[in-house]
Image (cartoon, rainbow, N blue to C red; front, side):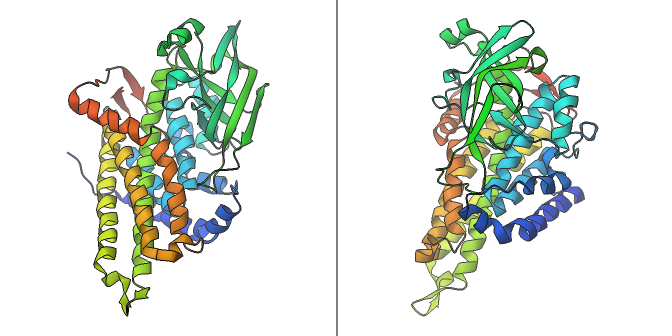
Length: 404
């Protein structure tokens, strides 16, 4: 039975993140966005709040909180700016929870503990210049040489590419299976920035999320020890998909926060701006746009809460998380467009936040599964074309067993 009432601990977290964002980030986010500058000083503040290891057990340096807490933090962060939630998605969602679930005890001690404590920052490297939704299209290869692998390739559109210390990288470790596009030939590797042959750079011509760091990294016969293979060789695709279930969840919750930000900005403006002698809040079509934002917010919140409930129960949630990510990101794009419309000409000005919301929302409709990919997934579930295979593995964050 689902209980939508938050616990006292969850309410305190929600309030704490909301107050921190309003106090420390909101007053200067416009300047950071205009300068295209990622403020690294945000990271130790997030670490102090326990956000960088929020759903990692205390014994591994985390806060030991549940998935609902992860969703609440994601929503509150994106309410302020998408760049903040992106940190949660790639560090806490895609990377840390993958290490928690698939890592050896040695890997957890060497990588997960300092990441959960915020001493090291981590990200996720799947997308390449010619491969996004088509994972089989990645070209990065890992050639086994004795007790290590030589990785060569390039990853593109990587959040925190020029900031992260550690990277979860996917590569073909079986070249014969690569020729056959057989996903059992893909492996996952834990990579450090300091490995010889590693280099990174920042993408400077982005349209949105300008206060965040997005870039690329290259690997030129980069040596990675055997001990840094995550899971077993050939399990990379499974790990990548597991990671996306966690990352998509944070994206869904974050997009919900963006819808709420659009709703609040549009409502505030509508109660101040007058046209034709009265407040635009009295105009029926303005009311319709604000009402749509409210309904989209409430639906999106219920969807990610449902997904979080299943995660806390240790139950398979790929279908529910996909639906939450799909609906909320598309709804955030709709809400941002309407928020600009409510502001009229002022919405086209950088003096108001809705233009930033509009630029930021589009990325989430594309990354971690495009709108079209999730549309097809949901149709395939309904039509019975898609069946999730039952493979059991431990998910210590919840103390449960998850089917994936």
